[in-house]
Length: 281
Image (cartoon, rainbow, N blue to C red):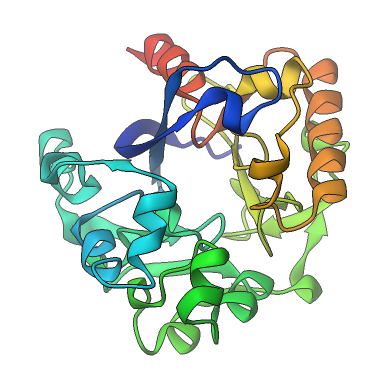
């Protein structure tokens, strides 16, 4: 089976009061990294799972009402944290990024998209349809910054539709269906409803033969997932569908119970990504 090399990068972060996010949290400031996975496929070359923050994020949120996004989720970022700034040290020219999977279209996941104009972008049709025509306050409430997307994005992107799903291998069950991105069983996108319209996770085997499941914002942290932490009323307001969010987390717990060695990587969980980096260093 095809295996991918994987490097976890941090492209900025946002901060919040933990008790404001989780009912079980403490009254302390916590930081949620915007992590990005740099993957290498032996045939399809280098690609990214999400893009994190970049200078484009700040340009897109410079004026009201979009500046309110920064006020709601204060962002910590400097130019050297952009994915494009980190790639040369890894021996990867920016132009070598051939493909990008966007787990969903919130600005902290799509903030660097414009940096890679020639990359093939995979995103669900549902996610794009939800974001395509929103603007102003409505967009901010949905964590969308329209200026982060190319004007012809809908035509350029490879839209993953419900009609093109396939049955997943036993390894990824209880999740039943997903998209086989390259048609070779190496990378699957798997629907993770609840947080955002059309959100997916990305599942693959890494070079150490570990099953890795990048679960986007299906949970903010692995502690939240495993300890059954609950969002506060305030943080639940950002969820697309609370019941779907809880159902997705239950499926993730079932997957972990069936495969305790699986690597679950929530985008904003610093501890999960640090442990994964330690494992492959």
